[in-house]
Length: 530
Image (cartoon, rainbow, N blue to C red; front, side, top):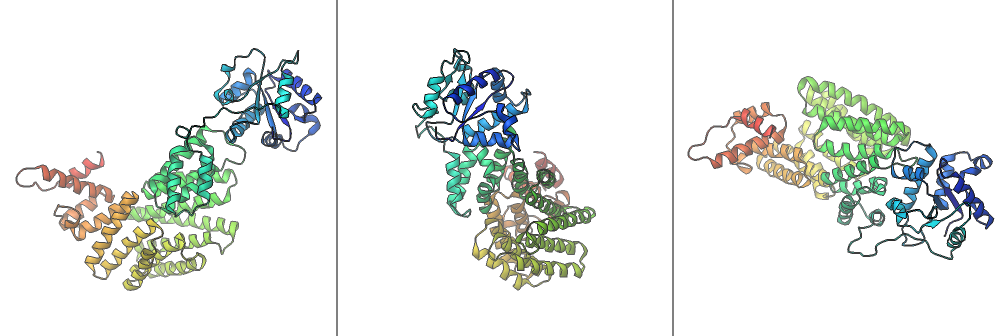
């Protein structure tokens, strides 16, 4: 059947007699057969590796018995680890079979066995019978194995009803640049059709990379949740334990960070790092540590004054750990170390915002220059660094120089999230230079772009800045400086402030006569718990 030999898979508790007779009959007819009755003589260095090689390279004969079926249908069967592991390998082999016929898995059942009792995964195969006492059925089986008859999987060939093949889409995706629209379209189809498919989880980097290249936070969330759900329902092969860590760090923590669900993002980053460490995936562990440091830096940016120093210290500690890990993996001149240097520069800028000490700004500038020397020009990390350089110019009151950095990023237009942030920073630079109309225009553009990406928090920040500068551009509510101050005190989250203002606007439109003055405390509570 197109393989180098045979491998007999059975349950020793109630299938050993049949398996032994089957092996003897096949060997007497010249077949090369592996089964675990030969283990004492074969003495492989690793029994799991021996099993994996047998399932991968040979036609598998499944000696069907009640205990084997229990192992195949449930993960709770505890007869012995071997049959559970073989059942898992069998599922894996069946999944990777692509042809309509000649499947290299052959169920062997007792004569008179009701084939309707087989699980669906085996019912679709060509099933053979064998009687260990009389030998009935062995000639038909031997003829099929020799190529005289075809075994196969019954498969629908109707293109209108069969689901898209995930593996084919994954191959197509590998041939595309993640930034291409076609790559995004494929990633969306994979998220739609890949539920329960372990191949999607194995190709997580490629699929989520396309979503990230287009800044599609909702798609990253869908892919991550789909893959995590698949992993929780699937027994993984040896070496696949670190898949969960990668999905947690590069997927779930990534979108939680952009949704500003920071407490949850910190927990996920920490969990992903621990799982990566458990399975010795050093790179994912380093990425998880860096992600964790980033989350604490964001917490410092939005936290109360008495919490900010704590968050900064936690972020710095994790950042140093990430640098040490990346340096050990890929050297001190790697791009990953450059990314760490960029985050260090951002950390020092946050420290300067807190302390107003000039030394922190000097450190930030120094680290930014070190990062620029390590990052590849034009890449996403490099463009984020240019946005940071512009922010450093803002802190140094070099508004014209800063605008040059972000204008170049905007002109490139390569990474939607970076471009949206560049508009936001350019607006801040314009405002610092006294150019209010330019600032309002760029804040509005940033709000539109972040909204298109569904980055609600970042969009709300820009909306609120416009509401303070030119309320008429975004709302019919006439916000006073007292209103702004009260709302910022009541609602640290800009999303809540925006919803409170829009709630008042909608309520006022439904009132007759003279408008009532806003009760911001009531409105904030109302939208917060709606």
